[in-house]
Amino acid sequence: MTRTTTHLDPDDLQYSPAFTQGVVAPAGPMLYVGGQLGIDRDGTMQDGLEAQTVQAMRNVLTVLTSGGTGPEHVVKLTIYLVHGSDAQAGYAAAREVWGDHRTAITVVSTAGHARPGALVEIDAVAIVPD
Image 1 (tube, helix red, strand yellow):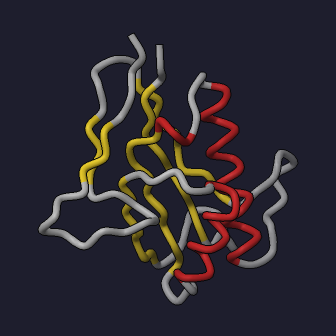
Image 2 (image 1 turned 60 degrees about the horizontal axis):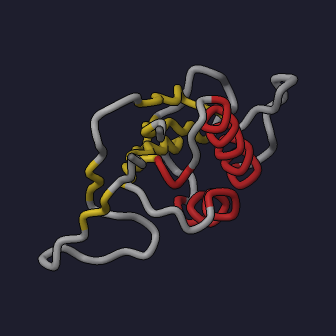
């Protein structure tokens, strides 16, 4: 049996091509991706929001792949942006890497992150398919 997610887009709520209002995930193994920053394998912080977001999304995808899953199985993304960051620029950069995989998303404005200079941090929850 293949484990899949079901997107919930109630008619009484606004429809978005970028995200879904809810996701029903089947019971079974789950992968919780810890917060990923815009740093490469060597620990070098990328320059600017767009570059950091692209790298953070690539890092999320790397963890998903190592866990035997992918963006099509993500049930929740949380994106933490430093206050004052251009959210639209961040969304565009994220979509460049993420593609058209709709999921439930929460975007949070923060005062800062644990690593100085970090403008974005992204975590995820995904099912691990059979």
